[in-house]
Image 1 (cartoon, rainbow, N blue to C red):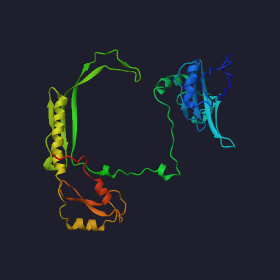
Image 2 (spheres, helix red, strand yellow):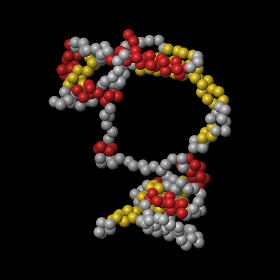
Image 3 (tube, one colour):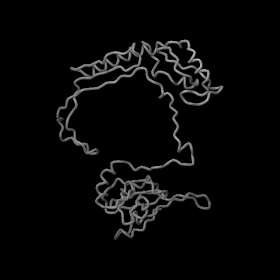
Image 4 (cartoon, one colour):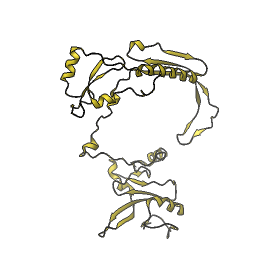
Length: 305
């Protein structure tokens, strides 16, 4: 059951628990609040007081913070218990360097040295859901060590498009439309009037001048241009060239390689050494393992035009 010492709540002899079953689940605390409209409740666990339930009710007459304890008895039966937190300031005292009285936010449990600072903090904090910050175990290498695994991200794209839009501002008609969550008001609207798009590639054969357009139907013209570029580039990347014969220096480099130039791992019988080449020029690029070589592919090579 819920056991609360209501020493701070005057003249309250009973609580409305109609229809509730005990031990009360955390998900049913909101039902308890509905039955008792003068009370708001926050629930946290007993490990660092991580929020399990944060009340959506604000400015009620009484607010209560509870510990939710779980365990087992000698017979292995599960036990659940709610304990009243009488002094929240003392509970989270280790979260601040201040040794005097602090004021604790009921949403994020951060202590503040000044009550006015807390009041300014609350409207911003209430916009976000409670968060449980958990740090990796420093003794567990899998948790505390980040390893780069996306070898495909190292593949240098042979083509990409850089674009820029130009627009002018016009006053918005709905000046009274205010976003209650972000507390922002729409003032002006961006109206597109032109764009520039440039095909970037290191292959001189396929380099072009930037395309510049200014006039009506900007997005339609931009879409048409991008789709045309997609067809042109698609024809190039799908027309793959075989590898050209290696020169002496390249043959020596390949023969001397003992690790993959992409993932830096040694070659194995199951993941053998291969020659990686540029499929547009046919030139030798480097020595990789078979797995990396298969991963270093052009994206979206399925269609041919």
